[in-house]
Image 1 (spheres, helix red, strand yellow):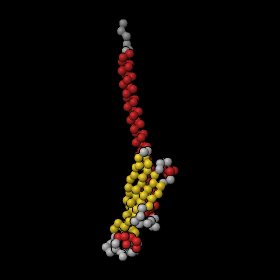
Image 2: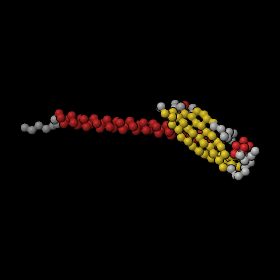
Image 3: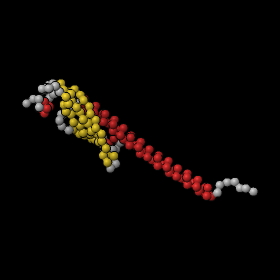
Image 4: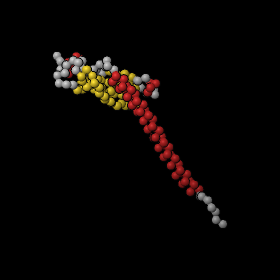
Length: 144
């Protein structure tokens, strides 16, 4: 009479293989969830950067040649400490341009946020038309 079924050794080997597969899947799932959270945070900061850049580009009273900065409301950042730094300066102007001349201005914006123990950031640039002020003309050396 022959018996059918699995031996105890076969069951132990099958269980071990299944355990290794489950551990591998859980590790992959955990890594995927961490990446998804990091990407969501980066996407949120990119949206805030775009919003801040638009606000700065529309601000005609923005000072030139000096750094301005601020922090984002934690409600907007998902509780993450985040902020920005910006600087506006003339980028291109006609030779010998004086006060009141049309110039191209460059706005540099850095967005930063705390991601655990490290600080992450990225930089943006934008350009706009502007009018050369007396201060900017002196700084550029085109007026006394």
